[in-house]
Image (cartoon, rainbow, N blue to C red):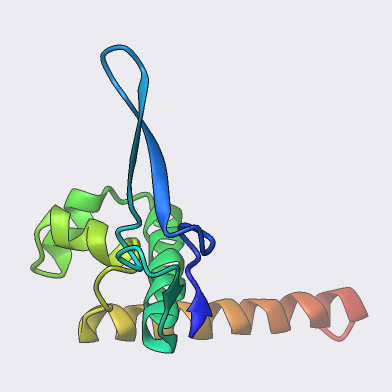
Length: 116
């Protein structure tokens, strides 16, 4: 088991609620209060963060990206939070993006070395 990245093993999260700005303490929604997550959950969190970064870099809202993948914005939000795994189409899109980023890094290195 791995320490939960959301609550950092504390098993709960503290939120601020309005009106009155009072604290609400609730079980962590990722680990459900266990303080730890499985390897699969950790992978889902990492992939969700990567996909969110990709979506933001593309300048797309959650609503736009959700529509492109036939999802509700709520489902996309859960995917980006690591509560649900990436869909197959999202995995393909993220792989393509990673391959493109790797190719660009290779070109940048060659430019710096003067090999282009």
